[in-house]
Length: 452
Image (tube, rainbow, N blue to C red):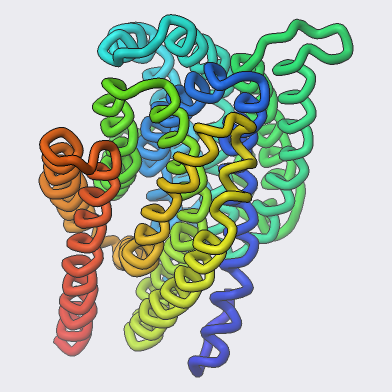
C-alpha cells in the first residue's frame, strides 16, 4: 500500500481495496446462499433444515473466525511501521492457533449439536437434515480456518484482489457439487440439503490449497517467506493475538448468533414461518456483506495509517468509509423494496413461503441503514486496535436490547414473528449511535497522545 495525500486519493484506494473484499465476501457467503437456495428447490423441509444448520454454523464460524481477523490489524500496523521482518512469525503462529480452534469446534460440536437441536421444536425431518448438514460441513472446518488466516495476511498487504480471485475460482465448484449431491446427478446419491454440506467442505479444502500455493510462490507474499522456517508454538504470541482477536470474535458472535437465538425462539411457529424467516435472514445477511466489506477495508487502511503515525489520514479514511456505507445502504434498500417478491422466489416455489418471505424482507430493509453505520465504524476501531468497546456494545445492543424487545413484541402482542425483526432493528440502531461516539472519542485520544 502507498501513502495518500488527499481525500480523492483516499477514496480511490479505499475502492481499490474494497471491491475485491466485497466480491470475496459475496463469494464466501454465496456458498451458504446457494446451499440454502438450492436446498429449497429440493423441498421445504430441506430449506428449513439447511437454513437452520447454516444459521448455527454462520454464528459459530463468524465468532471464531473473528479471532483470526486479528491478523489483519497486526500485520497492517507492522507494515505501516516498517517492521516487515516480524510478519511471518505472527502469521505462522496464527495458523497454529487456527488449527487448534478448528479442532476444538469439531470436538465441542460433537457433544453440543444434538442437545441444541433438541431444544428446538422442529419436525423430525427438519431436525435430521440440519444435523446431517452440519456433520457434512464439519469436514471442511480445519481448512477453512487456516485459509482465513492466509486471507487476512493477503488482505493486510492491500492485495485484496488476490483473495477475490481465490474465492471466485472455487465458487463454481461449490455450485456444481451442490447440484450433483443435492439432486443426485452423475450417479451420485440424492442427498438433498445434506449434500450441500459436503459440497462446501470440498470447496474449503480447495481454497486452502490455493492460498498456500499463492502465499508461498507469488510476490509480494513470497518475499515474507512464511513457510521457510518451522517456528515453535509460542503461547505468548497466541495470547497477543487473542487479546485483540477474542473481543473481535465475541463481537461478531453476538451479532450473528442473535439470529440463531431468534430461530430457536421462533421454533414455536410452524415450518412455513421458520423457512420464510430463515430465507429472509439469509438474504439480509447477504446484503450485510457490503458494510462488512467496508469494515474490513477500513481495518486495513486505518491500521496502516495508525501504524505509521498518520492519525489525520486514519481519521479521514474512517469517515469516508462510513459515508460510503450509508450510500450503499440506500441503494441496497431500494433494490430490496422493489424486488422483494423476485428475491423471495430465489428460495422457494411454495406460494405460502414466498409470500411470507417477501413480507419479512420489508423489515430487513431497515437493517441496512444501521448496519451501514455500525459495521464500518467497527472496522475503523479495529484498525486502531480498539476492540473491547465493540464487544460490549454488540452484547448490549443485540442481547440486552434487541432480543428482549423482540421477544416481548413477538410473544405478548399481535405482531407475532414480526416482533423479532422490530426488536433487532432497535438494537442495531442503539449500537450504531454508541459506536459512532466511541470512534470520535478514540480519534481524539490518539491525537492527544501524539501531541504528548
